[in-house]
Image (tube, rainbow, N blue to C red):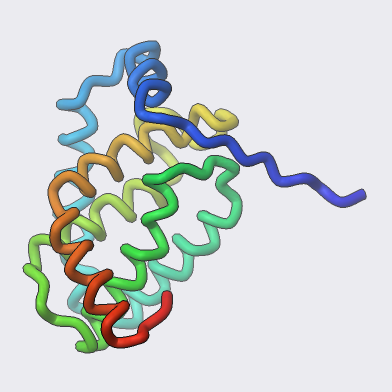
Amino acid sequence: MEEKEIIVDIDDDRIEDVLEENDITEDQLTEQFNKFSKKTEKLLEDEDKLERFLQRLEKKLKSIPVVGEKMAMVPVLISLVRAYVKKEYEDIPIGTIVSILGALAYILAPIDLIPDQIPVIGYIDDMAVLSICLKLVQSDIDEYLAWRSANDKEI
């Protein structure tokens, strides 16, 4: 029997409700985001480790039953980091790359504020951390998307 993929689009209001129900504050999310950003900075020093990290993340994304606007940005973020490391696209602040890696590392982490093992709800904190990152770096992502489009690059 073929297993059906469950797809749920969770909006910002639902994310806020679940975070509130679990007593998770924006300060806690920001603290986690900053912590993971600092940890991942070293990934930029080793292209092989970074590539393995990105491959593990892509594998995890395939198993996440939650699809929404924020999670849909993850492949773009992976593409941006790869283009930066390969020196195809370097017109971006290093702080943006570190922030993106921090958010991606949080998504990949098996243990976080809401365990990923809880169906659907377990990814709410991941989306919230990703949202914090996107607020910080959205203009850089927009510039990357424009560059990618102008240069016929695909994800």
